[in-house]
Image (cartoon, rainbow, N blue to C red):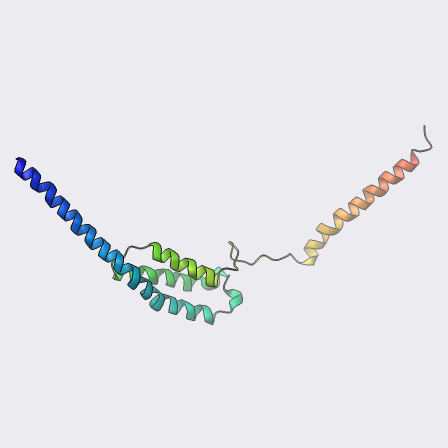
Length: 150
């Protein structure tokens, strides 16, 4: 009994070492080759799609959702073919760089913020000014009227 119990942990230890060695080899392969592969295979197509689109439409989700979805699927398929985990740190860094390049001027809702038209903005400016002037005139008129009355 003592002998078999000593062999079993040794085999487990060896098995764990083999698994860790194979995972680290896969992880090392994923670092350099995976990054190059997604840049060459996925980013090239996404760049073409974005260049075909007017830069003013880059922040429009309706216009970019298809290309962005293809880019996401491409990174997944490359990871799957290379036996890499997905998502991973490289994918995160890759998408951060894509967002910094293509979507850095976009608001979270997908539309660039802008002022409303003057026909809407005008009343919000004019009404408080007119009310303030009328209230001031009313206070002055009321104070002059009460001066003669004791």
